[in-house]
Image (cartoon, rainbow, N blue to C red; front, side, top):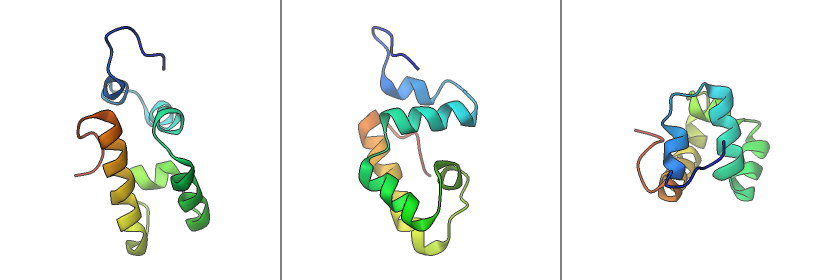
Length: 80
């Protein structure tokens, strides 16, 4: 989970790591306090979001999270 010299943050999310490691990286590098609150209030966790286990009324928040994370990473990693 440590960035090495010359490594891009996005590289951490494209290395084929298992879901547990990816979730840990999302929590450390991408998830904002507002997003944590949204997940908590809706009784979801990151695994639910990554695996499409949310109700349709939460989809706009998921899309917003993915867009925010992709912006931070500087490339498209999450979403369609």
